[in-house]
Image (cartoon, rainbow, N blue to C red; front, side, top):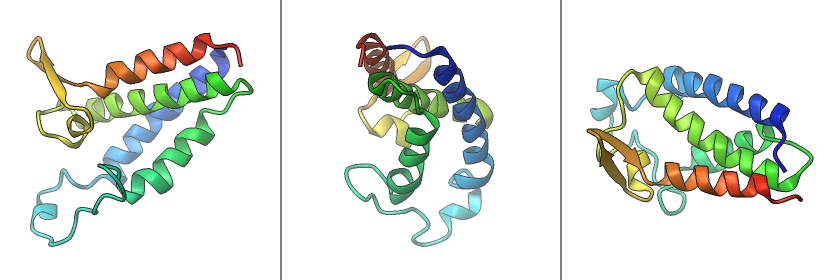
Amino acid sequence: MFDLQSFLRSAAFAVVYAGIEYRYVNRREEPWTKEVPGFYEKPLFWKISPYQAYLLLPLFIVASFTTSVTAWAGNVFFVAFLEDITYFVWRGRWVQPGEWTTTLLGGVEIGGVEVPLWWPAAILIGAGLYLVPL
């Protein structure tokens, strides 16, 4: 069941955290990172790094809290999508083919813009979860 207050709080968190991640956390954009051996973390499982599993996902879960379990889960999907898209806005350069976000499920070019396939999936799953009254 959709909860506007938790949705808006989740959206605000996603925008702020994307800025923090761009400015302070994700330094892969810096030229010096390509020269440092072992700078990139090895995935914990699939494509997911320890940072994403142990910090990012728990933060998203806590920030998305609402009393409806399905709305809470919907908020988590929404936060993941909005945080990712906002990161690229903060960065000032749109998603490029081959970037991490396109390696999860792939990406497709739409009108000259690369769109990670997990974005529409997250939106559809999140919206579906908002419709379930639990």
